[in-house]
Length: 409
Image: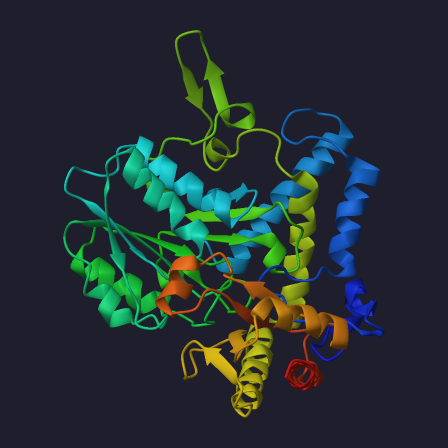
């Protein structure tokens, strides 16, 4: 049984030295580190199996298919989906959201007066696809604007009416670290309009928070393997089968085909209907190992550890009068802290944290330009925590920030 205290030794990247110091990795919102069992699973697939799936009867193909479909079962259990056919593999949360947007549009889900409601505080991946299909297919779109970057659930719900066909929102902001009450929003939205379709960007939420999507009753959720210990290039689209059955596929060819004539084609059953072409088989198989790692630690323990770390980091940062912190000022602030040093560009701060202290943080607009505009800033530094981070990492960040301030007077 792994423990959070000992798990750092499972991540080879943490053995690196940066600027002569032990690496302190605080860029987990961008991508998490990968443990040995995930790295080895991908390597072993290419060394020992290296076969396509579902398309042959030899042993390598059968083994690959069994491992791939075994990973689908692990994902289903991890989020408590109702059916295994509701788990669709994509190349990431971004592709999952694009798949949804375009599939809804080409399936004529939207009547003339129906509209989409999106917060402007979303990651570009959960904003731009809806924006673009609204232009291409002449679909009405409405926007919720938060106050100074803080999402107010009641104000968002007040914009929903009988004509609101679809809402899409994040479960955990990749900029402000704000946890959104998914269950409350879904429940109240469906009370207003029982036909409404609810979509959640779970890219930050799923890696951190114990999740039961039958309990939340959300219609769709997307997330990415690489933010929860798995390889890059693997994503998940979870959706209720009764809606997926009504949707047209977005990509064509390969495994999603049932039968083809010169005049027409028919498509495979769920979930393969939405999995065109050769998937990232090695990545999906390795993702199953990432889920095993998380399950062994325990998602509740991961959540509690990161919550305590975030609270401590917010307290220590707030004691620095030259640091401005963004996001909510309550317990909904979790795992992600965006901040700036007054009169110092965030790119300079992140560069110097790396060069002086071996600390990796992100700087920029974090793929959420509208949200940063809403907060009256153009960019920020972002420190984001995961379970392998420690109190000592937070203290090193604070000392590193002090060094930057001293260096640039």
